[in-house]
Image 1: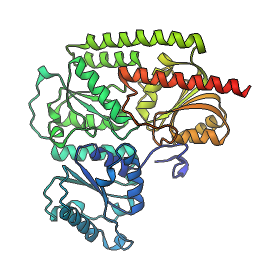
Image 2: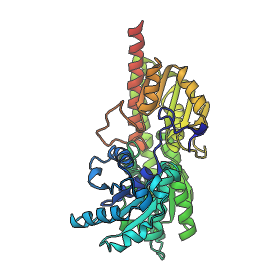
Image 3: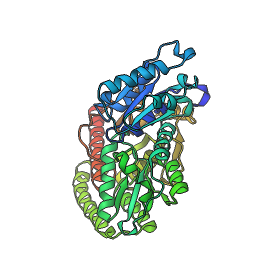
Image 4: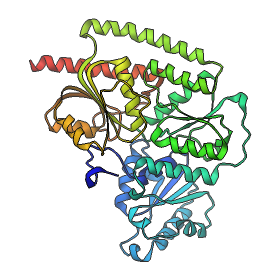
Length: 433
């Protein structure tokens, strides 16, 4: 999972374990709940990540708190007691995930058998899903496949006239994930597509049962959605397209055209025209700001985020939003780079940790698009930089509204953020003189 036998320096690799990833997929289903069969440390670690996006996750996220003897004697009595407590409380989740952490996965308890004996009045799925499985993306994928295998209906009637699509790999627990998911759905619906389901991103269990009805599966975040798409193709014969994320107006137009080539829609031009109108507006406003402050320029731009996000963001930043001397993209997941051909260097966190450390040690006049982890590293080393938060952990900026980073509205939002950090950097230089 990490290079050089390290447990992972959070300043160089922003990832969480498979237990967290599995929990986020299920927590993205309305009314679903999660029960962790593991120590409180694992529970609170995962809960902290879940609470970033949904403040009430503590009410839907439970732990059976096995003691040290469980390593020898098993966890059945702790699981049974916790499940009984949930039954007595009258809770009726739409779906319950019961997952074991790393250490308790080694015991070999029959989770499904233990839960089945409780005769729960609601659906459930069980799995071993600690860090031994891998990182966040591996856990997310494992939970998705488990839910799909158990609940998706075998025979579904595809309705060609509806242009139904599933959006795969979207995660409400990524930074600003809810707003981005809503913007993508809005774009596709305006173009004439019907959103059949968004697994792990707001679709109910009933909607997930209808996954086979879609004509096309659109993979947005490749690290989360590609294996799901491949699984659905084998099971239902549904073709898939690895589309990435549409940052910027040119990126949005390219994204929509790419989908339209595979599954033609009825109102593509409506959305393309809206992109052009937004571009004209932003260009006019930009001319005003350029007259006062000059063009947005940074000697170096460093983007550090989830794999697909980092690459797609890198393409938009250099192609549409800013001028720069050098662009470095740091991916937290290993994905195929079919998204960004304008980066000077693409690095993989963990594998390229030493090189990344060198880059973060020698920077001046840098724009960082990343998380608080990279920002704290630069700050400790006394680097002169400005930053925009685009990934968790996020202690540098407050996010209270649902304004997307992707799509037509997202293009204006991101350009606004970049202008503001650029103006701030110019003022800081003037003060330092």
